[in-house]
Image (cartoon, rainbow, N blue to C red; front, side, top):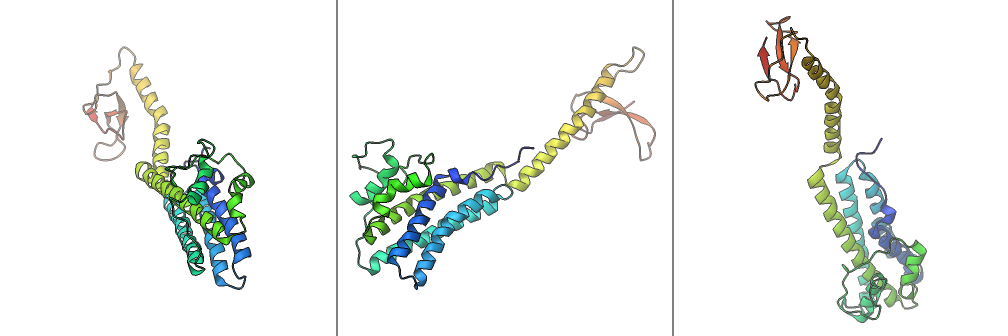
Amino acid sequence: MTRIRKSGGYRQLASFQTTTIIYDATVWFCEKFIDRFSRTGDQMVQAARSGRQNIAEGSRAGATSSQTELRLINVARASLEELLLDFEDFLRHRRLNRWDSASAEAKAVRQVAWGRKKDPSDLTDLTDQDQTDLTDLTDQQRWQLYSPWLDHPDPAVRANSVICLIHQANYLLDQQLNALEKQFINAGGYSEQLATARLNKRAEDRKPMAVANIRDACHASPGEVQPPACPRCGGMMALRTAKTGRNAGSQFWGCVAYPKCDGTTEV
């Protein structure tokens, strides 16, 4: 049986793949440049991990709960915002240069995603929104694309490049949240979709009975009374017998579309 709502498939999401690079880069950055006894290192790694893992959990939870998926994707977004501040603090506290978003260095990092479509020498007018599809690559291949910055011996280069990637991931997650909200508004949540599927199944189950009533009415013998048209919907009517009430046992014409239409006529 086909599931009502698809879920999973998060490994092909650009947001998940980008946060995987961010998580790996943060782990190795902290190992090399953050005191291993410092709580900051643990907090940065946990924030990076949360940014990645909550995308996966939210994607799977989407099978039965739109609200849970939205909440978890938003947690991922918030965790990346926390990580962004940690990398900015690292640069500021050490009086290291912070790349401007319009700088050649920042554009060069963003150019990685553009390079498969656009001339790599053209670094003009690049924004975090201008990302191409790298989802067909492996994690190792994607890392190699960013390796000149993420494996750089200068901590400022590493921190600034991770900041660029966080901005890209945040943009992707914002778009993901917008799409999930729109889907929820247009199609409803899981409970609503499940109830709709149940009503549709009940309607399908009633079709054979309605068809049989119409067939019996249309094949009446020459001497039999032909069923009248329904006074409410104009459809076919079938002969029925009242089971309860003061008219119990008496016959009447009832619309074959019942309960959608409750038109009746005396025999």
